[in-house]
Length: 396
Ligand SMILES: Cc1ncc(COP(=O)(O)O)c(C=O)c1O
Image (cartoon, rainbow, N blue to C red; front, side, top):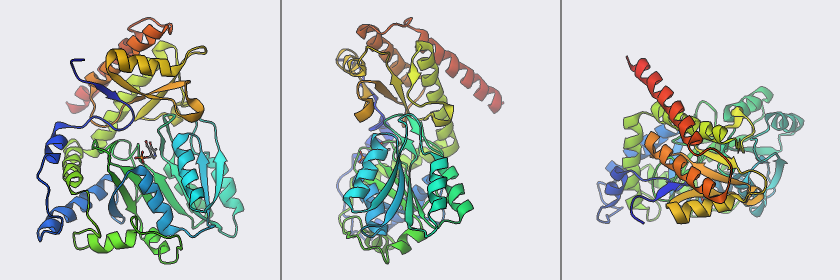
């Protein structure tokens, strides 16, 4: 099929030309004498994306799952207790990983469509007088349901209760797209991957870790090797790696960070908010429901759209793909068949979002979902046009 393939899954995301070009380099010597001149500023700049001065950024070959594993393996001992909430496939998988590592997970089962239940976190932490809970897990943006949780709220609870548990955040589908503040929120390990907000190919697990998390590693007994923070930090301090880094991807990451900074992080976040608002306006206009149960949970990077009773959301996804060259996300696990997901993160603008919404309308129309063709796109146009006017006035 001629024309661009529409990539609107919530990661991998569209890759900017600048990053593609940065990746088109000859392979290089990662032990070259001048390699630190490339690596040290890169690590310092990636840290800024986490909005951290005090943390340490570590970049592993891997993906988000590897980042989860690193958080656990570097800080925990078998049988350690962690508090988590499950409200979608990714928060579920992180808990599953913790259990496979032999942790004792208190997993609060929550509606798929809501996020971290602050009241239940508070109650469990308040009841934990012995401070048995060693870490509290937060999936900042649950990509399966399009739900964003309140990380700062969890920090406040820990502080109010003077509970010393570490705070681990999965920011795989939020960091570099949605405001994320490592230092301000007192996060101990934050996990990101290269293929979402960083607009890169998959292949890097990018984490930011606090001094407290590093210190926890001194007594933590879980085995670790590939994902060892200490090995990495020791070599990184000299501008090198303990094993062969994904050097080409690091060139891409340099271009990614440059792009994020040239736009400005606050503008990146505002753009995601604006585009997400357009998608939500379209969903409303179609008369459909957002899987996220209320504005306090709305995600600015992905929207999971519930199809009406009697329809299978996978039909929308396969029709969009086969007839219109448009990739949408399907529903995962509990919401399989019930939702399709529109990813709206990364290298994206108004026109691209309208393209996706137009494609969704085509596919929904073809499978027989009842709505007035054009109403979703029209609502998105009105939303974007209003936002653009507000930006023009603000710039005057
Ligand atoms: C929120 C979240 N966490 C973790 C993961 C797992 O990351 P990866 O697939 O890069 O291993 C994903 C993947 O989409 C995700 O969306």
